[in-house]
Length: 320
Image (tube, rainbow, N blue to C red; front, side):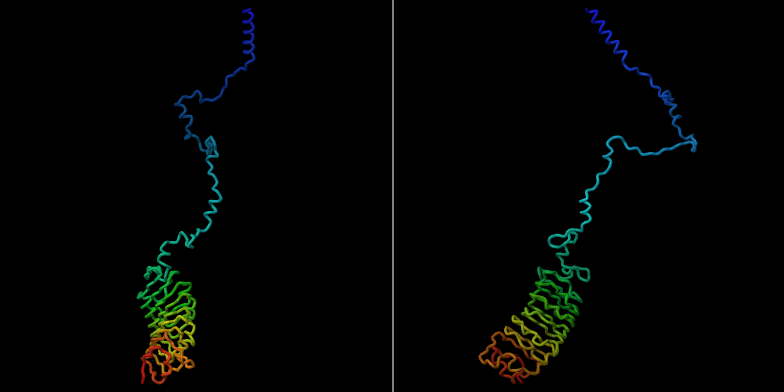
């Protein structure tokens, strides 16, 4: 029984050996397999090959592996769009590229200096006194009080105070102003005090009715420099100074609330009885007007006694 089993196992092994594939030797037919290391130097020596017989092939081979990793990823379209967009502006309207001092030191002047570097800015007040300026400098938008005395300003332009809605006082004493644009002050809704004394002004422009204090002393207004009824609608006007202007009349009508009227050193020759009072109403009393100066004029106040009966005090001036 054991012999039979061995016989069957031997037949199986023989059958498997017969059916297995045969391996033939591979001939690479290359001389380099039998070459020594010394022969390789001569084998790959290209210096002695004639140029005409040499075939040169130059190529750049990509390393094996995942070649997609070598390709740079495309830039997202959103990033490109952001670069093309203009610089965004901040909530307050200023660009982030604008230097901070443009807001702190005010706008640039014609001399390439910020206004608050050329002048002195304290809160909402700008002082430009005695700086040899020949024009009104650009002012910060929040300017409320502006002083530019003892300079060389010759003209006030319509845009010098444009959009300064908080401006309450302008003092341009002792300049060389001879010309003022008609609407230079008209569009200033908060203007209360206007001081233009010691200049060369010949014609007074339209003024805002909000004024409470006007000083245009020592100018050249003459007989035609003030328009008719120029101060009529200025209900809050308290002080009006027009000394040394060669005026030949008192500008009428005068606001009811006027407290002080200075007309010294002019050329006023006469006064009417209704200049200050209402001759038709003998009970009318003008309590506010307590300070009238007419000294230095050729007028004789004693000739018109009825002109002062409504006043709390007599005008100062010549009685002879």
